[in-house]
Amino acid sequence: MNIADHDSLLSPEELERRLLAIGAERYHNLHPFHRLLHDGKLDRGQVQAWALNRYYYQCRIPAKDASLLARLPTTDLRREWRRRLVDHDGEGTAPGGVERWLRLTSGLGLDNDYVMSLAGLLPGTRFAVDAYVAFVRERTVLEAVASSLTEMFSSKIISERVAGMLRNYSFVDADTLSYFMPRLTQAPADVAFALGYVKTHARTRVEQEGVLGALRFKCDLLWAQLDSLYFAYVAPGLPPPGAFRP
Figure 1 (cartoon, rainbow, N blue to C red):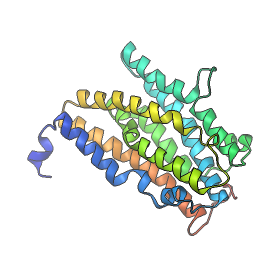
Figure 2: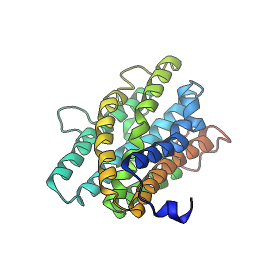
Figure 3: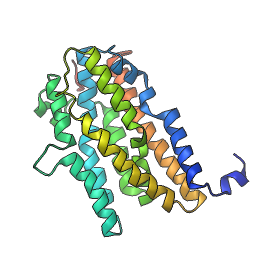
Figure 4: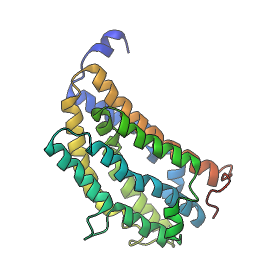
């Protein structure tokens, strides 16, 4: 890209096209660990390790959303973002995403007290998730909103994951995977708002590059979590001291 290209404002349509291109190149559905997971090539212990480590990401999503909620300047924006907290934490009348994820770990044979203690967490998982929470807390509201746009690609990976795991693993069933089905409707609603927001509020090329950079960062940290899982539980198969051992 030359200087003139970098200085020229992207149209909203071109900005969206570049966001989609980032997902096509970097989204973690392409990671070898996910290919193994979806294709039934992991054993029960490896699937347990994935679910246990992913719990930390799930349980910290409300924390990152709450930190952004506190910085949103208008009632309408706060109401919109509060919906995400409800989706993950619930309101006491129906289980939220965090509770549904614990149904997954329990269905895989893990003790929920152990999962929630985070005692078996991989250091790489902790570092990546904490970096995401810090990013949303410390960067601009525009970048924080843009970092959620990995949800543009999540419906495809959820459909692949549910179908593949039900087909290939005798130790999971539809109830075990109940976390995922509500996300097929929640995620598109989240994307519609967040994508519209960044296309409207990224008014300079610098801001647009910040939006693109935020999505790359989010894709990278999701990829890094799977790198840690692959190294610890697939090849070379070296979980660090204190980490979960199937």
